[in-house]
Length: 139
Ligand SMILES: CC(C)(COP(=O)(O)OP(=O)(O)OC[C@H]1O[C@@H](n2cnc3c(N)ncnc32)[C@H](O)[C@@H]1OP(=O)(O)O)[C@@H](O)C(=O)NCCC(=O)NCCS
Image (cartoon, rainbow, N blue to C red; front, side):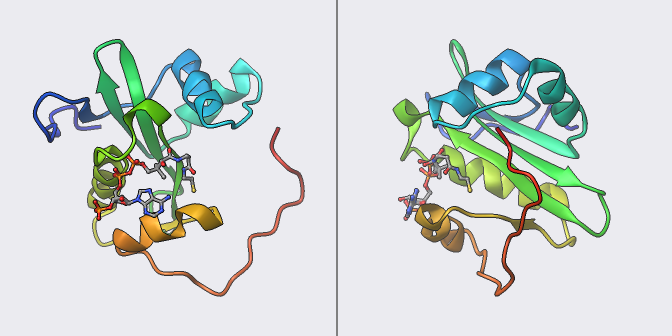
Protein backbone atom coordinates (compact mmCIF):
# COMPACT_ATOMS: atom_id res chain seq x y z
CA UNK A 1 0.00 0.00 0.00
CA UNK A 2 0.98 3.60 -0.45
CA UNK A 3 1.08 5.27 2.97
CA UNK A 4 1.91 8.59 1.34
CA UNK A 5 -1.58 9.15 -0.04
CA UNK A 6 -2.26 12.73 1.06
CA UNK A 7 -4.93 13.54 3.57
CA UNK A 8 -7.59 15.97 2.49
CA UNK A 9 -9.32 18.62 4.56
CA UNK A 10 -7.57 20.64 7.23
CA UNK A 11 -8.25 19.94 10.86
CA UNK A 12 -10.47 16.87 10.52
CA UNK A 13 -9.60 13.19 10.38
CA UNK A 14 -6.97 12.32 7.79
CA UNK A 15 -7.80 9.88 5.03
CA UNK A 16 -4.87 7.54 4.51
CA UNK A 17 -4.04 4.13 3.16
CA UNK A 18 -4.11 1.33 5.67
CA UNK A 19 -6.18 -1.28 7.41
CA UNK A 20 -7.68 -1.21 10.89
CA UNK A 21 -6.57 -3.60 13.60
CA UNK A 22 -9.04 -6.36 14.35
CA UNK A 23 -10.20 -4.43 17.43
CA UNK A 24 -10.68 -1.24 15.43
CA UNK A 25 -12.43 -3.18 12.68
CA UNK A 26 -14.91 -4.73 15.07
CA UNK A 27 -15.52 -1.40 16.80
CA UNK A 28 -16.25 0.45 13.56
CA UNK A 29 -18.60 -2.29 12.40
CA UNK A 30 -20.35 -2.25 15.77
CA UNK A 31 -20.71 1.54 15.54
CA UNK A 32 -22.99 1.07 12.51
CA UNK A 33 -24.77 -1.98 13.92
CA UNK A 34 -22.97 -4.64 11.94
CA UNK A 35 -22.04 -7.89 13.69
CA UNK A 36 -18.55 -9.30 13.26
CA UNK A 37 -17.31 -12.86 13.22
CA UNK A 38 -14.59 -14.11 15.58
CA UNK A 39 -11.24 -12.32 15.72
CA UNK A 40 -9.41 -14.94 13.66
CA UNK A 41 -11.98 -14.62 10.88
CA UNK A 42 -11.72 -10.82 10.99
CA UNK A 43 -7.93 -11.10 10.85
CA UNK A 44 -8.08 -13.37 7.80
CA UNK A 45 -10.58 -11.05 6.14
CA UNK A 46 -8.37 -7.99 6.68
CA UNK A 47 -5.27 -9.88 5.54
CA UNK A 48 -7.10 -10.80 2.34
CA UNK A 49 -7.72 -7.17 1.39
CA UNK A 50 -6.44 -5.84 -1.91
CA UNK A 51 -6.27 -2.36 -0.38
CA UNK A 52 -7.56 -0.52 2.65
CA UNK A 53 -8.18 3.07 3.56
CA UNK A 54 -8.77 4.68 6.93
CA UNK A 55 -10.12 7.98 8.19
CA UNK A 56 -7.89 8.53 11.17
CA UNK A 57 -9.01 10.78 14.02
CA UNK A 58 -6.95 11.83 17.01
CA UNK A 59 -7.93 8.79 19.05
CA UNK A 60 -8.03 6.23 16.25
CA UNK A 61 -9.88 5.36 13.07
CA UNK A 62 -13.31 6.92 12.63
CA UNK A 63 -13.82 5.44 9.19
CA UNK A 64 -12.66 2.60 6.97
CA UNK A 65 -13.21 1.05 3.58
CA UNK A 66 -11.64 -1.93 1.81
CA UNK A 67 -11.12 -3.24 -1.67
CA UNK A 68 -11.29 -7.03 -1.92
CA UNK A 69 -11.16 -9.49 -4.78
CA UNK A 70 -8.71 -11.18 -7.10
CA UNK A 71 -6.98 -7.93 -7.93
CA UNK A 72 -7.52 -8.34 -11.64
CA UNK A 73 -11.03 -9.14 -12.86
CA UNK A 74 -13.09 -8.70 -9.73
CA UNK A 75 -12.70 -5.86 -7.28
CA UNK A 76 -15.36 -5.21 -4.68
CA UNK A 77 -15.60 -2.31 -2.25
CA UNK A 78 -16.69 -3.50 1.19
CA UNK A 79 -16.80 -2.29 4.80
CA UNK A 80 -17.44 1.35 3.97
CA UNK A 81 -18.06 2.80 7.41
CA UNK A 82 -17.92 6.29 8.86
CA UNK A 83 -18.58 6.56 12.58
CA UNK A 84 -21.89 8.37 13.19
CA UNK A 85 -20.08 11.20 14.99
CA UNK A 86 -18.07 11.99 11.86
CA UNK A 87 -20.61 11.80 9.07
CA UNK A 88 -21.29 14.49 6.53
CA UNK A 89 -17.70 15.71 6.44
CA UNK A 90 -16.72 14.06 3.19
CA UNK A 91 -14.85 11.14 4.76
CA UNK A 92 -16.96 8.45 3.08
CA UNK A 93 -16.54 10.17 -0.26
CA UNK A 94 -12.79 10.52 0.10
CA UNK A 95 -12.30 6.91 1.16
CA UNK A 96 -14.34 5.53 -1.74
CA UNK A 97 -12.64 7.89 -4.19
CA UNK A 98 -9.27 6.63 -3.00
CA UNK A 99 -10.25 2.99 -3.56
CA UNK A 100 -11.53 3.83 -7.04
CA UNK A 101 -8.23 5.61 -7.69
CA UNK A 102 -6.30 2.53 -6.56
CA UNK A 103 -8.41 0.35 -8.87
CA UNK A 104 -7.40 2.51 -11.82
CA UNK A 105 -8.92 1.23 -15.04
CA UNK A 106 -10.23 -1.93 -13.42
CA UNK A 107 -13.96 -2.37 -12.86
CA UNK A 108 -15.13 -1.82 -9.29
CA UNK A 109 -18.34 -3.23 -7.89
CA UNK A 110 -20.10 -3.04 -4.55
CA UNK A 111 -23.28 -4.12 -2.85
CA UNK A 112 -25.18 -1.11 -1.55
CA UNK A 113 -27.91 -1.05 1.03
CA UNK A 114 -30.95 0.79 -0.38
CA UNK A 115 -30.42 3.82 1.87
CA UNK A 116 -26.88 4.45 0.63
CA UNK A 117 -27.54 4.04 -3.10
CA UNK A 118 -27.70 7.87 -3.51
CA UNK A 119 -24.34 8.20 -1.73
CA UNK A 120 -22.69 5.90 -4.27
CA UNK A 121 -24.55 7.42 -7.21
CA UNK A 122 -23.03 10.79 -6.30
CA UNK A 123 -19.66 9.10 -6.64
CA UNK A 124 -20.40 7.78 -10.12
CA UNK A 125 -21.64 4.27 -9.38
CA UNK A 126 -24.67 3.01 -11.26
CA UNK A 127 -27.16 0.29 -10.30
CA UNK A 128 -26.97 -2.98 -12.20
CA UNK A 129 -29.90 -5.33 -12.63
CA UNK A 130 -28.27 -8.35 -11.00
CA UNK A 131 -29.46 -9.63 -7.63
CA UNK A 132 -27.21 -10.37 -4.70
CA UNK A 133 -27.65 -13.96 -3.59
CA UNK A 134 -26.12 -15.69 -0.57
CA UNK A 135 -25.76 -19.31 0.48
CA UNK A 136 -24.97 -18.44 4.08
CA UNK A 137 -25.48 -15.16 5.89
CA UNK A 138 -22.73 -13.42 7.83
CA UNK A 139 -23.17 -13.05 11.54
C1 LIG B 1 -22.66 5.87 3.88
C2 LIG B 1 -21.57 6.54 4.72
C3 LIG B 1 -20.26 5.77 4.56
C4 LIG B 1 -21.41 7.99 4.23
O1 LIG B 1 -20.30 8.55 4.92
P1 LIG B 1 -20.15 10.14 5.09
O2 LIG B 1 -18.75 10.42 5.47
O3 LIG B 1 -21.22 10.67 5.98
O4 LIG B 1 -20.43 10.65 3.61
P2 LIG B 1 -19.85 11.97 2.93
O5 LIG B 1 -19.86 13.08 3.95
O6 LIG B 1 -18.56 11.68 2.28
O7 LIG B 1 -20.95 12.27 1.82
C5 LIG B 1 -20.62 12.45 0.45
C6 LIG B 1 -21.87 12.91 -0.26
O8 LIG B 1 -22.89 11.90 -0.19
C7 LIG B 1 -24.04 12.39 0.50
N1 LIG B 1 -24.54 11.31 1.33
C8 LIG B 1 -23.95 10.73 2.38
N2 LIG B 1 -24.72 9.74 2.87
C9 LIG B 1 -25.83 9.73 2.10
C10 LIG B 1 -27.00 8.92 2.11
N3 LIG B 1 -27.20 7.94 2.98
N4 LIG B 1 -27.93 9.18 1.16
C11 LIG B 1 -27.76 10.18 0.26
N5 LIG B 1 -26.66 10.96 0.20
C12 LIG B 1 -25.72 10.74 1.12
C13 LIG B 1 -23.54 13.58 1.29
O9 LIG B 1 -24.58 14.50 1.54
C14 LIG B 1 -22.49 14.16 0.37
O10 LIG B 1 -23.10 14.89 -0.66
P3 LIG B 1 -22.38 16.18 -1.33
O11 LIG B 1 -21.20 15.63 -2.09
O12 LIG B 1 -23.41 16.77 -2.20
O13 LIG B 1 -21.95 17.06 -0.19
C15 LIG B 1 -21.98 6.60 6.22
O14 LIG B 1 -23.25 7.18 6.33
C16 LIG B 1 -21.99 5.25 6.91
O15 LIG B 1 -21.01 4.79 7.46
N6 LIG B 1 -23.19 4.58 6.93
C17 LIG B 1 -23.35 3.31 7.65
C18 LIG B 1 -22.60 2.19 7.02
C19 LIG B 1 -23.06 1.93 5.59
O16 LIG B 1 -24.23 1.81 5.31
N7 LIG B 1 -22.08 1.83 4.68
C20 LIG B 1 -22.30 1.53 3.30
C21 LIG B 1 -22.35 0.04 3.11
S1 LIG B 1 -23.06 -0.39 1.53
